[in-house]
Image (cartoon, rainbow, N blue to C red):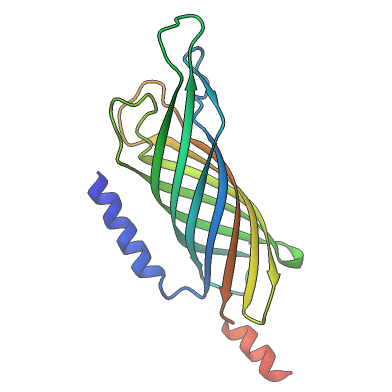
Amino acid sequence: MEKAILTSIIITLTTVLCGQDIKISVAPTINAAPAYLAVGGPGQNIKAGFSTSADYRHITDKRVTFGFGFYYQYSQVEFVPNLNSGDMLLTTEKVNLASVIFRSIYDLKKDFYLSFDPVVDLHIGYDSEQIIDNQTGLGLSLAFGKCIKIKETIFLNIEPRLWIHNIVPFHDINIPYRLTTAGLNIGVVFKQKNDSQIEETDSN
């Protein structure tokens, strides 16, 4: 399964190199891994992490556009003792994820946008003795952002983003922990004009 995911990452990155909109960004993040709809188990404290990414999308004159991206996330999850059982020590676990994100962007006015993005995650260096589950699987990411023009084709991008991983696990688990991350992406966008924009500029 991991080989298949790595292959899809390589194919995706090769395909999107012809994209017209390229964004490089980094983000400080906060992380937890709740077991949604589950009762009991250890508690958790929110911990810091970071994310870095490269995104590509095809520019058109439509309101909705699509693209791809490659993300790396480093997260920490701190589990605290269960007071009912007393059989667990305070421990912090590290999670490294490599992800392919399939972006769908809805452009708003004044360079604001919304983004709704399915994610394919690969949990790097997973240890079966960890409390947190293997996060390899399908997830979802949501964002609201704005591009601030610096030059004609260069923009500063500010994007609060939420990731929920392991929604559809690729491994058999009963009550999965789903790594949930909130971050502030700060990046630089290199935009290329599409044909309609070039024609409009020439006509002026």
